View 1 (cartoon, helix red, strand yellow):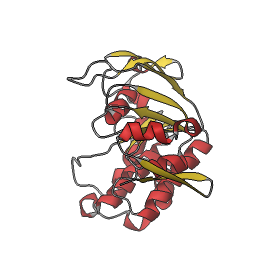
View 2 (tube, rainbow, N blue to C red):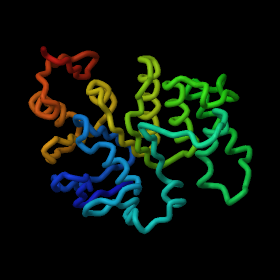
View 3 (cartoon, rainbow, N blue to C red):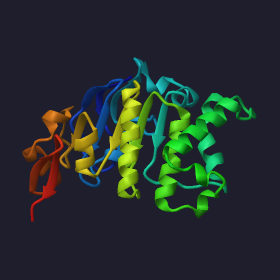
Length: 253
């Protein structure tokens, strides 16, 4: 789905880190982990074509991202931002339908298929009862689920999500991660920036670790979830247990 070759992020005031060369394949859920300020959001924006890398190339299905129109990119790739600014008053349904705009011609109205996709997404994110509410009246967690529903309505081949569980209660954290895992199981590619190490351990099958000194390592989650590597990543001693077949990490104090 996405090929990353010799990619060096352009982070102001920071020397070049390790160049990233990896492939995000269909059916995979990648988790990007690292402390605050390490460049996780910059990486996601670079993969979406919203920031220019210092060097290297990002390709969608072997086509350089920089050579594709924004419309073509939006037809294949969805981005869920960590922070969003609402430009104008809109209802939940109107907001979610924005996900269909890359597939409509100028001034074309949404059709029955677009409305059906939006309804399915709203139901899947437990938002259908809120469809006529103004976005400005929602809680932070509800607004986060609206952003995810908009991406789901877009039906992307590739998901790029920055802290997708931000503001969510425990139940909705689990349901969102289940939804993203189901998207991968249906043949899509999912890449998530996460702060919750245990969500990454439970739901991601591949991990990219970004270190403050510019170093990075990546691979299957089973090889990345090593206490030594994670303690170095966060500068925090960890205890690890195994619950229902998945590792659980707890800070040692």
